[in-house]
Structures are given as structure tokens and as C-alpha cells.
Image 1 (cartoon, rainbow, N blue to C red):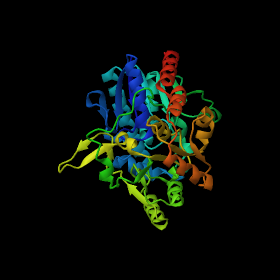
Image 2 (cartoon, helix red, strand yellow; image 1 turned 180 degrees about the vertical axis):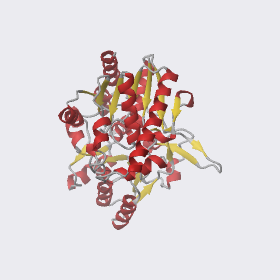
Image 3 (spheres, rainbow, N blue to C red; image 1 turned 90 degrees about the vertical axis):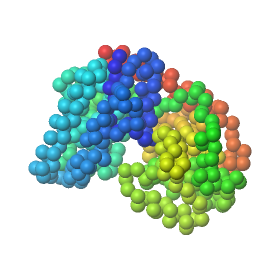
Image 4 (cartoon, helix red, strand yellow; image 1 turned 90 degrees about the horizontal axis):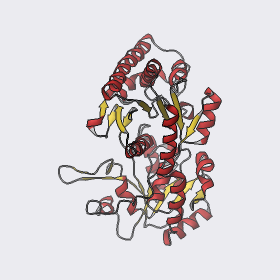
Length: 410
């Protein structure tokens, strides 16, 4: 069958881009074809349609975004702008479906979080009018984010985020979202957790990546303490700084792998000041990490997150909130000792499977510091965590649930 994935972007290391690639891999290995529609892409050009206005950072979309949120009344110009962009994107999606002979549409968070309201409205229009079978994959809903406020957008949210249409099957990534979707909209959904291909061996350090520690500026005796998240407040990076401060070992270097993302740079600057005040060596290496390896003119390399993980001596994941937690699965895949803050989704959907982790409840305690020191000195055997994670969050789980979804949809 021919599946058409639709989102604002399929590029980078955000959860939507990563999980959509895993869905595509599983579908393709099952004999299906996958095509992509988005505003920004790192997927193969031959199977991708890029419409710049589908990206939430397109100037026209960003201007509409600023004119809508936090408002109780809209200007006539804003309403007309949304309507015009909705029509344009609806037409582009319709052409994409026809050109690629798409049989199943797979919106990836585009009907979930309203980063691009016209795109969500356009998708809802196309699905309503064509009745195309649709798997709507929801990663994080608008009601889970404080910044989507104001009465002005409510009619659009009710219409398309997500839409209540008979040809759509809804997929969520955690139990809390499943309950909330049922409570708010009386919509049933299938829970498909985020996954990793655990049986596949992690990529080793090779000639390209062998100099990465040196490029970061680490000495041979230094320890790389990796927080593989974006630099946004809900990632709890202050807790990682507190941990390293209390470990009081100058060999420990806290490395943040991602950029500040789409929420500004004030938090990044606060973290730098905090790290300085606590005498923690903080390294921001987002400028070195990309989705693909490359060498620029002059020989400057861009590495991948997969290049960075093998060098980590310890991974911190002190997030205050996560829809699921890709970094947690990645650290287990690479066999790294791991500290996790017990965010709500972790407590309900991940903790019960029995992984061997250092757990905190929003505070770095003496016991936390002692456990981290012990694991830095003598890391635990990673194989048991891999086995458990493979059973509950592996490709076999994804393959089985996708198969059932497609069978039910058709």
C-alpha cells in the first residue's frame, strides 16, 4: 500500500521526525511504500513534496501564529489570512495524494498541536471531503502546552485538533493522552509507544567520529555527561547542573547535544549563568550535531547524535514533562547508565517494566549523588535494560500494532 505522511517538518531530531522515520521503516520492510509531505524535509527528495508554507517557521505562518495566540478577538485580516492559507494547503495536499496515489494518510502531529493552524484545517478538509483512510499519530496535544491560550482559536481547535471524522483512526504515545482524548472528545485511540530497533547493533566509533571528544574539547581523563535533549525549560537541565555540582569532580563535563529549539534562547543563557555559579563545566555542542554527517569547506565536521552517544560515560534525562521520552530509549540502546526524573508518563507507561535506572523525583538527593558516583566508577551491565526495552518498546511492538491498525482501517 501507499502511505502519505504529513507534518510541518520531517527533519532533525525532534520526536515527530524520529518516530515517523521508524514508522516508515517498519511499513517499508513490510512491503508498503511511504511518501512525505511537509514544509521542511531531510527525507529523500524522490519521495517528498515540500511546500514551504506547511512549516511553522514560514514567515506567513509565524505571523498568523503571533496574531492568533493569546487573543480573544481576531482581526479580519488574520481570519482572511488563515482562510487563504487553508485553501492553498488543502489544494497542495490533494495534489500530493493524487500524484502519489496515496491510499492511507498519516498526519504526524499536524492534527494534534496547532503550530500551523492552516495546515491542520486543510488536512481536516481533505480527510472530510475525500474520506481517505487516515492514521492520525498524536505526539502532544494543544491542551498539554500552556502557550496555546485565548478564545480566538477555539473554533479552529474544535474543528481540527484533532478532528472527529469517521475515516480517522487515532494513535497516541502514552496512556494519559489516551484517557484525555476519550474524556474530551469521546474518541477511542490506540496506544503505540515510541520505539527503538534494539536488536540492531549500535553504530560504533569509526574514523569519522573518532575525533569528536577532541573537537568538544575534552581531555583524556574527562568524563562526558550527556544530556541529549533540546534546551527548553521542561527538560530540567538545572537538575543535571545540580548533580554535577554536587559530584564535585572537575573531570565531569556536562554536554548538551541540542539547540535551544523554537522557544527562544533566554533559558540557555540562564543555564550558562547557573553553571558558572555552581562551577560546572557546561558544553553546548548543538552546532556540531546534525541529522547527517558532513564536512564543510575548511574541514569542519558535523556529527550525528548517534556519533555522540558512544562517547558518553553517563546520560542525564531529568525532564519535567515528556510525551514519551526518546532520549531514554536511545541511552538504553547505546548501553549507557542513565538518570531519569520520574515525569508522569514515565511513572505510568515506562517505570512498571522494571528498567535499572537512577530515579529522582525532581530533586537531587545525597542518594542520587552516591548512586551516580558509583555508576560512573563501575557502570551496570546494560544487557538487561536492552532486553526489557526491546520487549516493551521495540520494533516488534510497533509492527504488530501498525498491522492491526491498518487492517482495522481498511
